[in-house]
Length: 52
Image 1: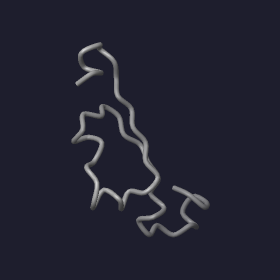
Image 2: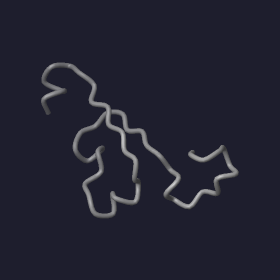
Image 3: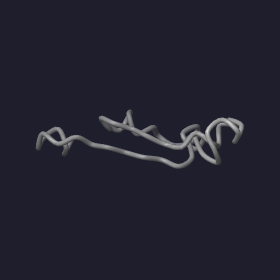
C-alpha cells in the first residue's frame, strides 16, 4: 500500500520457496516483482550448476 501510494515498485526476493507453505507469499502482500531460488524444489544440480 505504501509503494502504491508513492508510485514505487515493490520488489521481493526469497531463498526458500518451500517456506511459502507456511508464510504468506510476497504477491499476496502486494509485491509487484518476486524472484527467488529454486534449488530447494528438488531440481538436480546438473541442470545449471549448484543453484537454479
